[in-house]
Amino acid sequence: MQDIIKAKEIAEKVNNIGGKAYYVGGFVRDRLLGIENKDIDIEIHGVEVSVLRELLSSMGKTLERGESFGIFSLKGTNIDIAMPRCEKPIGTGHRDFDISVDPFIGTKKAAERRDFTVNALMEEVLTGEIIDHFGGKEDLKNGVLRHVNDDTFSEDPLRVLRLAQFAARFNFSVADSTKELCKKIDLSSLSKERIEGELKKALLKADKPSVFFEVLREVDGLDFWFPEIKKLIGIPQNPDFHPEGDVWVHTMEVLDRAAKYREKVSNPFAFMLSALVHDLGKTVTTEEINGVIHSYKHELKGLPIVKRFMMRITGEKELISYALNMTQLHMKPNIMAKVGSSQKSMNRLFDESVAPFDLICLASSDKGEKMAETESFLFERLVNFNEIMSRPFVQGRDLIEAGLKPDKSFTEILAYAHKLRLAGIEKESALKQTLSYARKLK
Image 1 (spheres, helix red, strand yellow):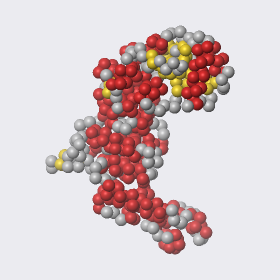
Image 2 (cartoon, helix red, strand yellow):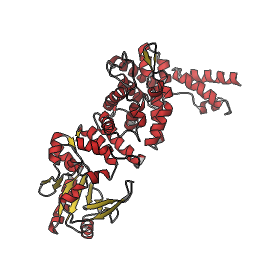
Image 3 (cartoon, helix red, strand yellow):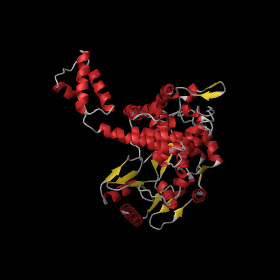
Image 4 (cartoon, helix red, strand yellow):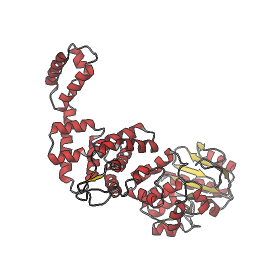
Protein backbone atom coordinates (compact mmCIF):
# COMPACT_ATOMS: atom_id res chain seq x y z
CA MET A 1 0.00 0.00 0.00
CA GLN A 2 2.86 2.37 0.80
CA ASP A 3 4.31 1.82 -2.68
CA ILE A 4 0.94 2.64 -4.29
CA ILE A 5 0.84 5.89 -2.29
CA LYS A 6 4.39 6.68 -3.40
CA ALA A 7 3.49 5.89 -7.03
CA LYS A 8 0.62 8.35 -6.90
CA GLU A 9 2.89 10.95 -5.33
CA ILE A 10 5.29 10.53 -8.25
CA ALA A 11 2.39 10.75 -10.72
CA GLU A 12 1.12 13.98 -9.15
CA LYS A 13 4.53 15.63 -9.37
CA VAL A 14 4.90 14.49 -12.99
CA ASN A 15 1.41 15.72 -13.79
CA ASN A 16 2.24 19.15 -12.32
CA ILE A 17 5.03 19.64 -14.86
CA GLY A 18 2.99 18.50 -17.87
CA GLY A 19 3.76 14.79 -17.97
CA LYS A 20 1.80 11.61 -17.28
CA ALA A 21 2.56 8.46 -15.32
CA TYR A 22 1.24 5.03 -16.26
CA TYR A 23 1.33 1.64 -14.57
CA VAL A 24 2.61 -0.77 -17.22
CA GLY A 25 3.36 -4.42 -17.92
CA GLY A 26 2.71 -7.25 -15.52
CA PHE A 27 1.49 -4.94 -12.78
CA VAL A 28 -1.53 -3.89 -14.85
CA ARG A 29 -2.16 -7.43 -16.07
CA ASP A 30 -2.13 -8.84 -12.55
CA ARG A 31 -4.34 -6.05 -11.17
CA LEU A 32 -6.98 -6.88 -13.77
CA LEU A 33 -6.65 -10.60 -12.98
CA GLY A 34 -6.96 -9.93 -9.26
CA ILE A 35 -3.44 -11.24 -8.57
CA GLU A 36 -1.21 -9.50 -6.06
CA ASN A 37 1.98 -8.10 -7.58
CA LYS A 38 4.26 -6.16 -5.27
CA ASP A 39 6.60 -5.06 -8.07
CA ILE A 40 5.27 -1.80 -9.48
CA ASP A 41 6.38 -0.63 -12.91
CA ILE A 42 5.66 2.97 -13.92
CA GLU A 43 6.34 4.59 -17.27
CA ILE A 44 6.68 8.39 -17.43
CA HIS A 45 5.66 10.23 -20.60
CA GLY A 46 6.15 13.85 -21.61
CA VAL A 47 9.07 14.64 -19.31
CA GLU A 48 12.77 14.86 -20.20
CA VAL A 49 15.13 12.42 -18.46
CA SER A 50 17.06 15.18 -16.69
CA VAL A 51 13.83 16.67 -15.31
CA LEU A 52 12.59 13.27 -14.10
CA ARG A 53 15.95 12.58 -12.47
CA GLU A 54 15.76 15.83 -10.53
CA LEU A 55 12.12 15.22 -9.58
CA LEU A 56 12.84 11.72 -8.22
CA SER A 57 15.95 12.89 -6.36
CA SER A 58 13.75 15.31 -4.41
CA MET A 59 11.71 12.32 -3.18
CA GLY A 60 14.54 10.17 -1.83
CA LYS A 61 17.66 8.27 -2.79
CA THR A 62 17.42 7.47 -6.49
CA LEU A 63 19.10 4.57 -8.27
CA GLU A 64 19.60 4.74 -12.03
CA ARG A 65 20.39 1.95 -14.47
CA GLY A 66 22.39 3.63 -17.21
CA GLU A 67 21.60 7.04 -18.62
CA SER A 68 20.66 5.58 -22.01
CA PHE A 69 18.06 3.24 -20.45
CA GLY A 70 16.11 5.86 -18.51
CA ILE A 71 15.25 3.41 -15.72
CA PHE A 72 15.10 4.58 -12.11
CA SER A 73 14.10 3.22 -8.74
CA LEU A 74 13.57 4.79 -5.34
CA LYS A 75 15.47 3.17 -2.48
CA GLY A 76 13.16 1.50 0.02
CA THR A 77 10.40 0.86 -2.51
CA ASN A 78 9.47 -1.84 -5.02
CA ILE A 79 8.85 0.76 -7.71
CA ASP A 80 10.69 0.87 -11.04
CA ILE A 81 10.26 4.10 -12.99
CA ALA A 82 11.05 3.97 -16.69
CA MET A 83 10.95 6.28 -19.69
CA PRO A 84 9.48 5.23 -23.06
CA ARG A 85 12.23 3.70 -25.19
CA CYS A 86 13.05 2.89 -28.78
CA GLU A 87 15.03 -0.31 -29.31
CA LYS A 88 16.77 -1.39 -32.50
CA PRO A 89 18.54 -4.78 -32.75
CA ILE A 90 22.21 -4.57 -33.69
CA GLY A 91 23.08 -8.25 -33.12
CA THR A 92 21.67 -11.63 -32.08
CA GLY A 93 22.34 -11.45 -28.33
CA HIS A 94 19.79 -10.22 -25.79
CA ARG A 95 22.00 -7.19 -25.06
CA ASP A 96 22.57 -6.38 -28.72
CA PHE A 97 20.15 -3.47 -28.93
CA ASP A 98 20.60 0.22 -29.63
CA ILE A 99 18.40 1.79 -26.97
CA SER A 100 17.33 5.41 -26.91
CA VAL A 101 14.89 7.22 -24.61
CA ASP A 102 12.05 9.16 -26.23
CA PRO A 103 9.64 10.72 -23.67
CA PHE A 104 7.34 11.94 -26.43
CA ILE A 105 6.97 8.71 -28.41
CA GLY A 106 3.34 8.26 -27.32
CA THR A 107 1.61 5.42 -25.53
CA LYS A 108 0.90 3.31 -28.62
CA LYS A 109 4.48 3.31 -29.85
CA ALA A 110 5.74 2.65 -26.33
CA ALA A 111 3.37 -0.28 -25.81
CA GLU A 112 4.22 -1.74 -29.22
CA ARG A 113 7.64 -2.89 -28.06
CA ARG A 114 6.11 -5.16 -25.39
CA ASP A 115 5.78 -8.89 -25.94
CA PHE A 116 2.11 -9.79 -25.50
CA THR A 117 -1.10 -7.82 -25.72
CA VAL A 118 -1.90 -8.63 -22.07
CA ASN A 119 1.44 -7.06 -21.09
CA ALA A 120 0.96 -4.02 -23.32
CA LEU A 121 -1.88 -2.65 -21.19
CA MET A 122 -1.29 0.68 -19.47
CA GLU A 123 -3.17 2.32 -16.60
CA GLU A 124 -2.95 6.02 -15.87
CA VAL A 125 -1.84 6.21 -12.24
CA LEU A 126 -4.03 9.14 -11.18
CA THR A 127 -7.26 8.41 -13.09
CA GLY A 128 -7.19 4.60 -13.38
CA GLU A 129 -7.95 4.85 -17.11
CA ILE A 130 -6.86 1.70 -19.00
CA ILE A 131 -4.98 2.35 -22.23
CA ASP A 132 -5.41 -0.65 -24.52
CA HIS A 133 -4.02 -0.20 -28.03
CA PHE A 134 -3.79 -3.88 -28.99
CA GLY A 135 -6.81 -5.68 -27.57
CA GLY A 136 -5.12 -6.81 -24.38
CA LYS A 137 -8.26 -6.58 -22.23
CA GLU A 138 -10.15 -8.92 -24.55
CA ASP A 139 -7.25 -11.38 -24.65
CA LEU A 140 -6.98 -11.21 -20.86
CA LYS A 141 -10.71 -11.92 -20.55
CA ASN A 142 -10.43 -14.91 -22.91
CA GLY A 143 -7.12 -16.18 -21.45
CA VAL A 144 -5.15 -15.82 -24.69
CA LEU A 145 -1.49 -14.96 -25.21
CA ARG A 146 -1.00 -13.05 -28.44
CA HIS A 147 2.12 -11.20 -29.56
CA VAL A 148 1.89 -7.45 -30.19
CA ASN A 149 4.11 -7.02 -33.23
CA ASP A 150 5.81 -9.56 -35.54
CA ASP A 151 9.05 -7.61 -35.86
CA THR A 152 9.57 -6.45 -32.28
CA PHE A 153 8.53 -9.81 -30.82
CA SER A 154 11.14 -11.69 -32.86
CA GLU A 155 13.95 -9.38 -31.76
CA ASP A 156 14.30 -11.18 -28.41
CA PRO A 157 14.20 -15.01 -28.64
CA LEU A 158 13.58 -15.25 -24.89
CA ARG A 159 9.99 -14.28 -25.60
CA VAL A 160 9.36 -17.84 -26.79
CA LEU A 161 10.26 -19.05 -23.28
CA ARG A 162 8.24 -16.24 -21.71
CA LEU A 163 5.27 -17.35 -23.79
CA ALA A 164 5.58 -20.87 -22.39
CA GLN A 165 5.98 -19.80 -18.78
CA PHE A 166 3.10 -17.31 -18.94
CA ALA A 167 0.89 -20.01 -20.46
CA ALA A 168 1.84 -22.31 -17.58
CA ARG A 169 1.47 -19.73 -14.81
CA PHE A 170 -1.85 -18.29 -15.96
CA ASN A 171 -3.22 -21.39 -17.72
CA PHE A 172 -3.66 -19.33 -20.91
CA SER A 173 -3.92 -20.62 -24.46
CA VAL A 174 -1.69 -19.33 -27.26
CA ALA A 175 -2.94 -17.60 -30.40
CA ASP A 176 -2.23 -19.58 -33.57
CA SER A 177 -0.45 -16.63 -35.17
CA THR A 178 1.91 -16.43 -32.17
CA LYS A 179 2.63 -20.16 -32.35
CA GLU A 180 3.56 -19.88 -36.02
CA LEU A 181 5.83 -16.91 -35.36
CA CYS A 182 7.61 -18.72 -32.51
CA LYS A 183 8.38 -21.67 -34.77
CA LYS A 184 10.61 -19.38 -36.85
CA ILE A 185 12.66 -18.04 -33.92
CA ASP A 186 16.12 -19.44 -33.20
CA LEU A 187 16.77 -19.89 -29.46
CA SER A 188 20.45 -20.81 -29.67
CA SER A 189 21.75 -17.29 -28.96
CA LEU A 190 20.19 -17.20 -25.48
CA SER A 191 22.31 -17.64 -22.37
CA LYS A 192 21.74 -20.46 -19.89
CA GLU A 193 21.02 -17.86 -17.19
CA ARG A 194 18.04 -16.52 -19.12
CA ILE A 195 16.74 -20.01 -19.88
CA GLU A 196 17.10 -20.98 -16.23
CA GLY A 197 15.23 -17.85 -15.16
CA GLU A 198 12.14 -18.61 -17.26
CA LEU A 199 12.27 -22.33 -16.42
CA LYS A 200 12.42 -21.49 -12.71
CA LYS A 201 9.32 -19.29 -12.93
CA ALA A 202 7.40 -22.03 -14.71
CA LEU A 203 8.44 -24.77 -12.31
CA LEU A 204 7.86 -22.74 -9.14
CA LYS A 205 4.86 -20.56 -9.99
CA ALA A 206 2.63 -22.67 -12.25
CA ASP A 207 -0.02 -25.04 -10.91
CA LYS A 208 0.64 -27.17 -13.98
CA PRO A 209 4.31 -26.75 -14.99
CA SER A 210 3.77 -29.30 -17.74
CA VAL A 211 2.09 -26.58 -19.81
CA PHE A 212 5.50 -24.88 -20.17
CA PHE A 213 6.88 -27.91 -22.00
CA GLU A 214 3.69 -28.64 -23.92
CA VAL A 215 3.77 -25.12 -25.37
CA LEU A 216 7.46 -25.41 -26.26
CA ARG A 217 6.68 -28.72 -27.93
CA GLU A 218 3.92 -27.07 -29.99
CA VAL A 219 6.21 -24.28 -31.20
CA ASP A 220 9.23 -26.51 -31.89
CA GLY A 221 11.11 -24.89 -28.98
CA LEU A 222 12.60 -27.97 -27.32
CA ASP A 223 15.41 -28.83 -29.71
CA PHE A 224 18.28 -26.63 -28.57
CA TRP A 225 17.82 -26.32 -24.79
CA PHE A 226 15.68 -29.34 -23.92
CA PRO A 227 16.62 -32.13 -26.37
CA GLU A 228 16.75 -34.78 -23.62
CA ILE A 229 13.22 -33.90 -22.60
CA LYS A 230 12.04 -34.02 -26.22
CA LYS A 231 13.46 -37.53 -26.60
CA LEU A 232 10.93 -38.76 -24.01
CA ILE A 233 8.22 -38.36 -26.65
CA GLY A 234 7.18 -41.74 -27.98
CA ILE A 235 9.26 -43.84 -25.56
CA PRO A 236 6.83 -46.62 -24.60
CA GLN A 237 6.15 -47.88 -21.09
CA ASN A 238 4.67 -51.05 -19.68
CA PRO A 239 0.91 -50.31 -19.70
CA ASP A 240 0.43 -52.46 -16.60
CA PHE A 241 2.38 -49.87 -14.59
CA HIS A 242 1.94 -46.81 -16.81
CA PRO A 243 -1.48 -46.78 -18.45
CA GLU A 244 -1.11 -43.02 -19.01
CA GLY A 245 1.10 -43.50 -22.07
CA ASP A 246 4.68 -42.78 -23.09
CA VAL A 247 7.48 -41.40 -20.92
CA TRP A 248 6.73 -37.81 -22.01
CA VAL A 249 3.15 -38.05 -20.75
CA HIS A 250 4.31 -39.72 -17.54
CA THR A 251 6.95 -37.05 -16.90
CA MET A 252 4.47 -34.25 -17.47
CA GLU A 253 2.07 -35.86 -14.98
CA VAL A 254 4.87 -36.29 -12.43
CA LEU A 255 5.78 -32.61 -12.83
CA ASP A 256 2.23 -31.51 -12.09
CA ARG A 257 1.94 -33.81 -9.08
CA ALA A 258 5.32 -32.63 -7.80
CA ALA A 259 4.06 -29.02 -7.85
CA LYS A 260 1.82 -29.92 -4.90
CA TYR A 261 4.89 -30.63 -2.76
CA ARG A 262 6.86 -27.47 -3.63
CA GLU A 263 6.05 -25.61 -0.42
CA LYS A 264 7.14 -28.57 1.72
CA VAL A 265 10.50 -29.65 0.28
CA SER A 266 13.94 -28.30 1.20
CA ASN A 267 14.87 -27.01 -2.27
CA PRO A 268 11.79 -26.43 -4.45
CA PHE A 269 13.62 -25.65 -7.70
CA ALA A 270 15.99 -28.60 -7.39
CA PHE A 271 13.03 -30.82 -6.49
CA MET A 272 11.04 -29.78 -9.56
CA LEU A 273 14.07 -30.24 -11.80
CA SER A 274 14.45 -33.75 -10.38
CA ALA A 275 10.83 -34.50 -11.23
CA LEU A 276 11.59 -33.34 -14.77
CA VAL A 277 14.73 -35.44 -15.30
CA HIS A 278 14.11 -38.55 -13.18
CA ASP A 279 13.26 -40.81 -16.12
CA LEU A 280 15.66 -39.53 -18.78
CA GLY A 281 17.46 -42.87 -18.58
CA LYS A 282 14.48 -44.57 -20.21
CA THR A 283 15.54 -43.05 -23.53
CA VAL A 284 18.56 -45.39 -23.59
CA THR A 285 17.30 -48.42 -21.63
CA THR A 286 13.78 -49.07 -22.87
CA GLU A 287 13.40 -52.37 -24.71
CA GLU A 288 10.79 -55.04 -25.29
CA ILE A 289 11.64 -58.50 -23.94
CA ASN A 290 9.23 -61.36 -24.66
CA GLY A 291 6.49 -58.87 -25.41
CA VAL A 292 7.01 -56.91 -22.20
CA ILE A 293 8.47 -53.37 -22.09
CA HIS A 294 11.33 -52.87 -19.62
CA SER A 295 13.70 -50.04 -18.71
CA TYR A 296 16.18 -51.87 -16.52
CA LYS A 297 18.62 -49.66 -14.57
CA HIS A 298 17.30 -46.47 -16.15
CA GLU A 299 17.88 -44.68 -12.85
CA LEU A 300 21.62 -45.40 -13.14
CA LYS A 301 22.20 -45.28 -16.88
CA GLY A 302 20.34 -42.02 -17.04
CA LEU A 303 22.79 -40.19 -14.76
CA PRO A 304 25.14 -39.01 -17.56
CA ILE A 305 22.12 -37.73 -19.49
CA VAL A 306 20.80 -35.91 -16.44
CA LYS A 307 24.19 -34.34 -15.81
CA ARG A 308 24.50 -33.17 -19.42
CA PHE A 309 21.05 -31.60 -19.32
CA MET A 310 21.56 -29.94 -15.93
CA MET A 311 24.93 -28.47 -16.91
CA ARG A 312 23.36 -26.93 -20.00
CA ILE A 313 20.76 -24.98 -18.04
CA THR A 314 22.53 -24.14 -14.78
CA GLY A 315 25.96 -23.54 -13.29
CA GLU A 316 24.84 -24.30 -9.73
CA LYS A 317 26.62 -27.41 -8.50
CA GLU A 318 24.13 -27.91 -5.69
CA LEU A 319 21.24 -28.18 -8.16
CA ILE A 320 23.15 -30.65 -10.31
CA SER A 321 24.21 -32.84 -7.38
CA TYR A 322 20.68 -32.85 -5.96
CA ALA A 323 19.12 -33.90 -9.28
CA LEU A 324 21.67 -36.67 -9.81
CA ASN A 325 21.13 -38.03 -6.30
CA MET A 326 17.33 -37.92 -6.58
CA THR A 327 17.38 -39.55 -10.01
CA GLN A 328 19.57 -42.39 -8.79
CA LEU A 329 17.36 -43.11 -5.77
CA HIS A 330 13.88 -42.22 -7.04
CA MET A 331 12.66 -45.83 -7.44
CA LYS A 332 13.88 -47.19 -4.12
CA PRO A 333 11.31 -45.72 -1.68
CA ASN A 334 8.32 -47.28 -3.45
CA ILE A 335 10.10 -50.60 -3.98
CA MET A 336 11.17 -50.78 -0.33
CA ALA A 337 7.73 -49.79 0.91
CA LYS A 338 6.16 -52.51 -1.22
CA VAL A 339 8.27 -55.22 0.43
CA GLY A 340 8.08 -53.66 3.89
CA SER A 341 11.82 -53.09 4.27
CA SER A 342 13.30 -52.95 7.75
CA GLN A 343 14.08 -49.71 9.55
CA LYS A 344 17.78 -50.48 9.19
CA SER A 345 17.48 -50.76 5.40
CA MET A 346 15.44 -47.59 5.19
CA ASN A 347 18.01 -45.79 7.32
CA ARG A 348 20.70 -46.64 4.77
CA LEU A 349 18.53 -45.25 1.96
CA PHE A 350 17.74 -42.04 3.84
CA ASP A 351 21.38 -41.62 4.71
CA GLU A 352 22.34 -41.91 1.06
CA SER A 353 19.79 -39.28 0.07
CA VAL A 354 20.63 -35.55 -0.02
CA ALA A 355 17.08 -34.84 1.16
CA PRO A 356 15.13 -37.86 2.45
CA PHE A 357 11.82 -36.01 2.86
CA ASP A 358 12.11 -34.66 -0.69
CA LEU A 359 12.90 -38.16 -1.96
CA ILE A 360 9.65 -39.50 -0.52
CA CYS A 361 7.76 -36.61 -2.14
CA LEU A 362 9.38 -37.39 -5.50
CA ALA A 363 8.52 -41.08 -5.13
CA SER A 364 4.93 -40.11 -4.36
CA SER A 365 4.82 -37.85 -7.42
CA ASP A 366 6.25 -40.66 -9.53
CA LYS A 367 3.77 -43.28 -8.38
CA GLY A 368 0.71 -41.07 -8.41
CA GLU A 369 -2.50 -42.66 -7.24
CA LYS A 370 -2.96 -44.87 -4.17
CA MET A 371 0.04 -43.43 -2.35
CA ALA A 372 -1.57 -42.91 1.07
CA GLU A 373 -0.52 -46.26 2.55
CA THR A 374 2.94 -46.12 0.97
CA GLU A 375 3.52 -42.55 2.17
CA SER A 376 2.45 -43.51 5.67
CA PHE A 377 5.02 -46.31 5.74
CA LEU A 378 7.81 -44.13 4.36
CA PHE A 379 7.17 -41.11 6.57
CA GLU A 380 6.95 -43.33 9.64
CA ARG A 381 10.34 -44.78 8.77
CA LEU A 382 11.69 -41.26 8.19
CA VAL A 383 10.52 -40.11 11.63
CA ASN A 384 12.35 -43.06 13.17
CA PHE A 385 15.46 -42.29 11.10
CA ASN A 386 15.50 -38.66 12.22
CA GLU A 387 15.13 -39.73 15.84
CA ILE A 388 18.03 -42.16 15.51
CA MET A 389 20.22 -39.54 13.83
CA SER A 390 19.50 -37.07 16.62
CA ARG A 391 21.07 -39.35 19.24
CA PRO A 392 24.71 -38.97 20.39
CA PHE A 393 27.06 -40.91 18.11
CA VAL A 394 30.70 -41.92 17.81
CA GLN A 395 32.88 -39.18 16.31
CA GLY A 396 36.56 -38.87 15.50
CA ARG A 397 37.35 -37.10 18.76
CA ASP A 398 35.81 -40.01 20.71
CA LEU A 399 38.20 -42.41 19.02
CA ILE A 400 41.19 -40.15 19.66
CA GLU A 401 40.26 -39.80 23.34
CA ALA A 402 40.09 -43.61 23.51
CA GLY A 403 43.71 -43.78 22.35
CA LEU A 404 43.47 -44.19 18.59
CA LYS A 405 45.81 -42.17 16.44
CA PRO A 406 44.52 -40.87 13.11
CA ASP A 407 46.10 -42.81 10.25
CA LYS A 408 45.14 -44.21 6.86
CA SER A 409 42.63 -46.61 8.47
CA PHE A 410 40.80 -43.85 10.35
CA THR A 411 38.31 -43.21 7.53
CA GLU A 412 37.38 -46.90 7.42
CA ILE A 413 36.96 -46.98 11.19
CA LEU A 414 34.67 -43.95 11.14
CA ALA A 415 32.65 -45.55 8.33
CA TYR A 416 32.17 -48.61 10.54
CA ALA A 417 31.01 -46.37 13.41
CA HIS A 418 28.55 -44.72 11.03
CA LYS A 419 27.08 -48.11 10.09
CA LEU A 420 26.48 -48.80 13.77
CA ARG A 421 24.79 -45.42 14.11
CA LEU A 422 22.46 -46.22 11.20
CA ALA A 423 21.67 -49.54 12.86
CA GLY A 424 20.48 -47.64 15.92
CA ILE A 425 23.26 -48.83 18.22
CA GLU A 426 23.63 -46.57 21.27
CA LYS A 427 26.86 -44.56 21.44
CA GLU A 428 28.48 -46.39 24.37
CA SER A 429 28.02 -49.79 22.78
CA ALA A 430 28.94 -48.45 19.33
CA LEU A 431 32.19 -47.02 20.69
CA LYS A 432 33.19 -50.39 22.17
CA GLN A 433 32.39 -52.20 18.95
CA THR A 434 34.24 -49.60 16.87
CA LEU A 435 37.35 -49.85 19.04
CA SER A 436 37.23 -53.63 18.75
CA TYR A 437 36.96 -53.28 14.98
CA ALA A 438 39.94 -50.90 14.99
CA ARG A 439 42.07 -53.37 16.93
CA LYS A 440 41.29 -56.08 14.41
CA LEU A 441 42.31 -53.76 11.57
CA LYS A 442 45.62 -52.98 13.23
